Image 1 (tube, rainbow over the protein chains, first blue to last red):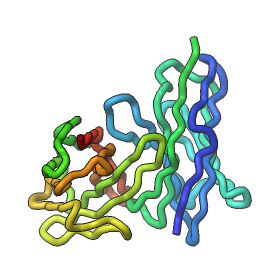
Image 2 (image 1 turned 30 degrees about the vertical axis):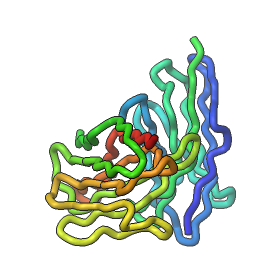
Image 3 (image 1 turned 30 degrees about the horizontal axis):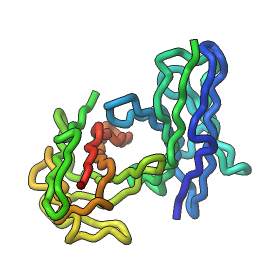
Length: 112
Length: 117
């Protein structure tokens, strides 16, 4: 079975500051890990995914995430927040590429 | 990029009525689609896998007679909430995978918010 825990339901950052969203997973098999973003009234959009290749995964919009097996973590970061990064972010785990188990989500607000 | 639409975006219905939600892949074909349910401040929970031309596969604990799924074409899956009750009020999201080469990416619809009075 797979599950995901996102620490912090809401994160507020200043424009230009580091964005750090935490995700820990549990999986009985080597996992696929994903980060999705959801803007208001839109579908989930894939930011990046880990599929057992490089442990540091670069995604769209300047985001990246690092897979740490020893910590069972897949935290998402962006060095410098932009106002357009305000959205809901979901971490997800899967034993394959399509049957996803999602975290509860983290809402990001960006202060000017 | 690929687009998945859902209709309606919002629906309010009376208890005991049935509600149909459509999920369409607009510019690609999908033999499989997925239906999720999301309660406020909670995770998206996979409800079922919709298979074109065959029966849907339901996750444990999901009543197949309550949530009827029909995948009649390669671009359309429908979820019907039968005899809806207030506890069925939720946000329903579908997704469809698109394979390009060795990569498969899930594209999600914008969701349908159901309120049962």
